[in-house]
Image (cartoon, rainbow, N blue to C red; front, side, top):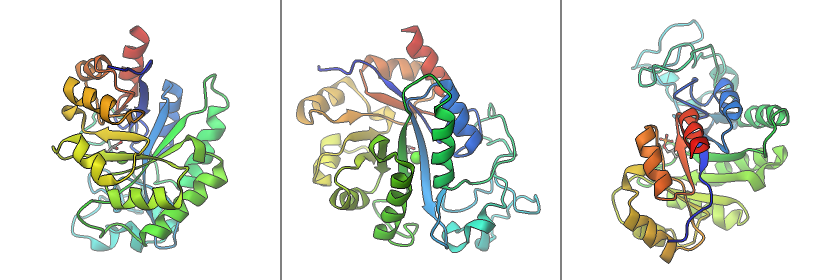
Length: 281
Ligand code: G3P
Ligand code: CA
């Protein structure tokens, strides 16, 4: 089986296991740990700012309102970032409470940053580190079976994100990730030079999802539990040149397995574990 020479470490939401997700401290820590790629998710605010956030709402598990109170789960007004201007969004603290699923997070007050701010922060920090420029995996959240969160429209969303990448000079180091093939097709059509990654979370054969897409993306991102020797062999044979970067690989034993199966990279909430493992092999 043709195999990659190295496996990249992609810091998931920066390093969600170690710092508040999708925040400047998480991105800085991931960079200091030595990740190859920083992964993040973006949504669009009512005033058309590109905001780094996994959910297009405030997660009641981790966010506090501007008065420092937990968010009531029935508070609809606080649940749709695309209905709020960014100046309002920025007043929420999404870092002081440790995510219950990631008790090793080091908490600190953090707001949801703009993509523009994140790129300029990382690029400035990266020049102080003795390593190659970091790559970016930027995920547009859209479900293959719905578009209720895909605001304001696919075209506007893509053009706003591309404008930020272009202004920061990082287009050539960025891969656009999406579970929704409709968005990837549009991105490929409108920005053919932009690298793309098809994410999948269903249990269908990988070839079915890839053939349905209609073009060969740069990268394929399956749930890591679906990565088997047979599936990797098929991918290398039938889709030559396609990179394989499964998500979200957090346990060391699973990282070992992924490296043995010669994936091109792993996305992990714990880049420290992956980097130590890789350094030790
Ligand atoms: O990199 C892919 C991964 O981020 C997809 O899962 O839900 O954490 O965005 P999610
Ligand atoms: Ca993501």
